[in-house]
Length: 289
Image (cartoon, rainbow, N blue to C red; front, side, top):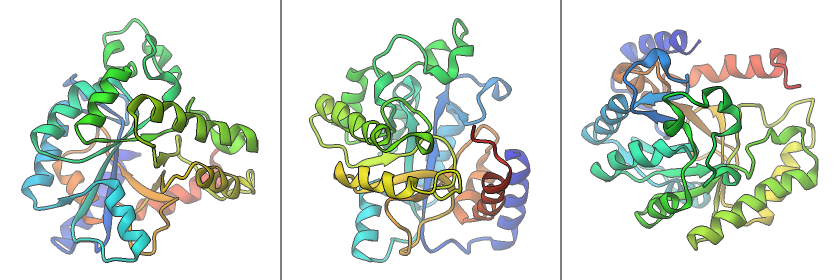
């Protein structure tokens, strides 16, 4: 599916050339692997060499890579978003975010936000959704960061955000469970890094409004507001304009199928069309049981 989406997006980019979107692009990464064999990687992974090419492309292409909090400030104040703005985010808290991605971000002086599934940080095992990789050569790559690594990221200027406490599917939870996932993760991370966490990212890709969870949007907002959060990123696809709501920010995924051509197309806004099939699939065909 990603390969097909990239093909269509590349065709759009060929016609658009330099007609860039007027808003901002929030990129979302997961694992940045040192393995050069793309076929072995998880779909939402990128290899280290490709990651550096992408970050270099942002630098040399005169994109304005800004912290997430700066983008949120523009939205809150209704101020024009700088042209060619890009925000870099990472979900989950993989060790290779620290060992592989962080040195590249430092090399090119790029700001970023790392969203942590706080309950697993510092654990010796794998994230539970990756148990099938236990004992493989990817164990170290896919294990969680420890708190010393998180603190180093924070001290270097990388923003640390919350990705819930236990990376569960929030829409199926009750009010108290949602609040605990939102606030406990914030409390744990804040205690470790010494700075109040204000940014949040939802795990999994799903519509905020759905007939199966009619009260979820309101309950989530109440929990975020109780914690004093200022933003919430989703896995819904799209780009950011001044009309975007800071608590349901759309992002563009970077995956193993991306090369510089498709990466450029995503920055141009040529991937935005995929929000339509994503919505149709999630609303009508995806089974969330």
